[in-house]
Amino acid sequence: MIKHTITYILLAFGVVSISASAVETPPPFADVHLHFNWDQEELLSANEALSVLEKNNVQFAVVFSTPSANAFKLSDISNGRVIPFFSPYITGHSRGNWFHDKHVLPLARKGLEEGRYKGIGELHVISGLGPRRDNKVLQGLLELAAEFDVPFNIHTETSDYRFLQPICEQHSKVRFLWAHAGGVLGPEHSEGILKACSNVWIELSARDPNHYGGLLDDDGKLRAGWKNVITNYPDRFMVGTDPVWNAHQVNRWYEADEGWLHYHKFISFHRKWLKELPKDVEKKVRLDNALRFFKKS
Image (cartoon, rainbow, N blue to C red; front, side):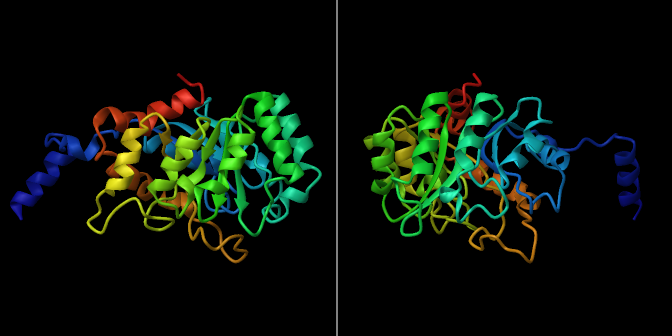
């Protein structure tokens, strides 16, 4: 009892030192896949979201939101550390019909001309559901990305990387960032698209156990196939958190999205597997590739 009392007093006056590992700041991180959606804002403010990023030493980030303009609420207070993308989900009800909405292209052009948006995406192209690759709104957004020289974050839900290949080949001037490394697809698909299109980079958001998974084996180690393709293409991969919760239940009306409340868990997952890469590759994937791709370095 006396020993515990003395320890408490020493801690209170700062005499007992706390181990460095308990307070050590993690290395800087670039998060290339954030959302600040209307239903996330019900649980935390933009200032609180920015505080979450600061606590996790996120020095640069990309945000896309529903509705699209919601991204400004986070980027406008970030002093340039968070950049907004134009999302074609211009209202809270746009996700299923954006590719038929006549307002999408004029709004995208206006935002890009004004310099408010720094890219286009995240944009879902889902095999069998739409849009078709020749859809006029999709093609118009791709043309705007080339015209304004901004990145294009594309989420393809399909069974093969060759679903994306015609798009990146047709639009060779567009710098694509392939969301989630194609979702459920394995490392051979990442290698396939990297070989096919030199204008495609890959981000590994939402590959945690709660979403697409697949990066780690049963022992929690980075799968050999993933490690090989990342180390073979060390300049073409980036990381993001995609802070959404119950992501496979799209457009839930009955509860807010609590993804930001789990942010530390998402980013810690990525920090852990990144340590298995060679140090120079780890730093590129964690930070340097994003800074170079988004012209921040």
